[in-house]
Image (cartoon, rainbow, N blue to C red):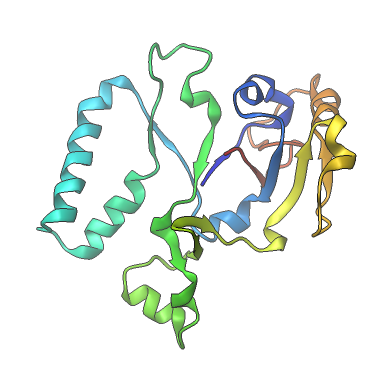
Length: 204
């Protein structure tokens, strides 16, 4: 699952690609289940990235290192992203997406969490202590978040009264968030949407 850390006041270019609908999550709550910011690698590191990927693929088939080490490598290589498909100074460079990810590597299947001493067994099976819940529907995997994980919903003004919101999440109008902040100077710690530092915006 992918998120963006781009403040909404600076997100016009980003939302041209991914749309203006979104779900804002409390960042700390996602960090507690394994979400991390992406590590961007430039074109100069491409050969190294290819070598690491090939090594991990071969280790999954015929392990030669400790399973705990392999799982850790596999878990964290998931957070590496190339800087750009083309020139590094392109306006649509991946670097400007300020992406965070939450992957299956840190999510425990719900069935395993129903066992007695579930967290202990999950740790013994190689899951990190910061684990979230994973569930499957029709062969597809999803992150099982709690209602308290959600900070607010983001919708365009024309759709505010038409959004189904059975859980009663706060709803913010995208245009209002952009307009009220467009003249502000962003701080180094400002994260996502309304300028607060505790929200991540799901973008896919």
